[in-house]
Length: 127
Ligand code: SF4
Ligand code: SF4
Image (cartoon, rainbow, N blue to C red):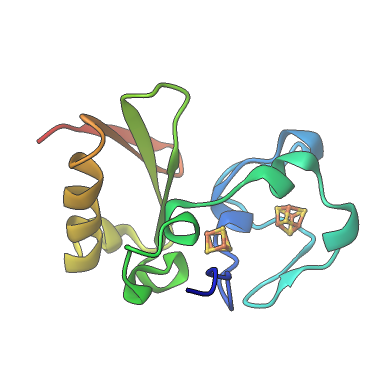
């Protein structure tokens, strides 16, 4: 099966912080051509090169769960028993949407703890 690609999704370039650029989370990177890609792709920082959201890594997640479609992305945390769901603060209702709830259920099958980050808000979901 062909590997997944980000396509028109660029949501991590908004939701994730990039230490090398002093880019805060939940703010668009100035180098992001939204919906297209990185305008400094060949020289992008190492943390951008390293980053993959779960949707990109795992083809078991449906296409409909692509982060730009559900306004949220799931990614590793720094502890093995948890992951982080980053929700776009511009879409506060995303957290209660059916696809995001289905994603949280799927994450809980692997991770006992799912942290939710949305701008300055954070929460721990345990089911
Ligand atoms: S959030 Fe995932 S699918 Fe979207 S651009 Fe980033 S790595 Fe690619
Ligand atoms: S440098 Fe490029 S890949 Fe990294 S956050 Fe900015 S736009 Fe995205």
